[in-house]
Length: 91
Image (cartoon, rainbow, N blue to C red):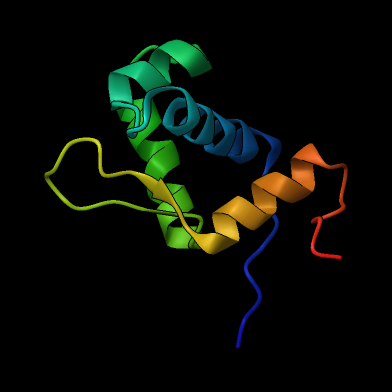
């Protein structure tokens, strides 16, 4: 089994934006909302980030359906590690 590479700092920002939106609103952000939070000029940029996170296994979403973006267990773990300074809190 191959190990998922550690997310980049920018990928962690995207994961945090998705997670924060879920926590605050109870549903996934739109690509436009991700653009606003991440200071991106277009939804294509947000979509590119989401696609790379999907390929890496950090998020899932249903094609052609809005607000289905979710962090996977691996995405939640990576974000937790980043927020806790490398401690995943599993002890």
